[in-house]
Amino acid sequence: MEILLFLHIVGVVIFFGNIITAAFWKVRADINGTPSFIHQTVKNVMLADIIFTLPGLVLIIVSGILMAIQAGYSLSGFNWLTISLILFVLTGIIWLALLLPLQRKMIHYSFQSIDTGVISKEYKKASRKWANFGIIATLLPIVILYFMISKGI
Ligand code: HEM
Image (cartoon, rainbow, N blue to C red; front, side, top):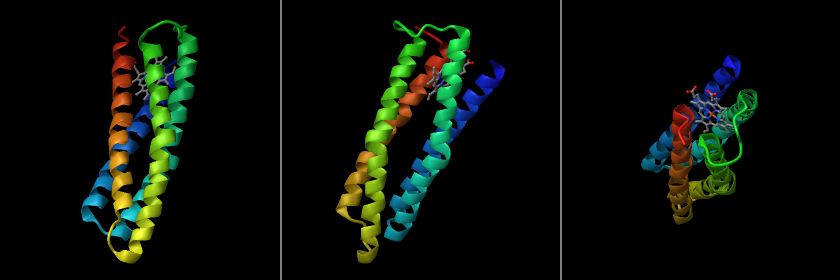
């Protein structure tokens, strides 16, 4: 159990570490406003998701399921674990269905903006949506973190 919990926490640290720092660098690039710099940054946000967020999520899911089985926690009814799982799936849907496609759009639009030297309206629109859904996809795991520690409900 200790090694699984250790791997679970490592996954959580990698996951939160990456989503928070990625948002920081992205906001810094948008404030800077240079299309080529923004383009590099949004490409790196995508790369960091593949290198850090994805393995972090795999660690969280595999260790979490194994710990739940070992401890014999109930996966039926309304409890801290089932609520967390629902929120976790919701986060995954937001990430896969909205954030990743928006990141692809931002890479595309920022590349197009390099020629004109001015960041396009399309990029700004995608960036705004990314920020809004990104906030939701960050807050939900924070709620999960609370449930995991409190094991309340
Ligand atoms: C963003 C998502 C998640 C976060 C932030 C998170 C965080 C944590 C943390 C911090 C703990 C340690 C709690 C403690 O020892 O006091 C924990 C334990 C645990 N987590 Fe997660 N977790 C997440 C997702 C999952 C998922 C998807 C599962 C799948 C079943 C899961 C199952 C468990 C289990 C079974 C424990 C052990 C509880 C125990 O017996 O001590 N977690 N989690």
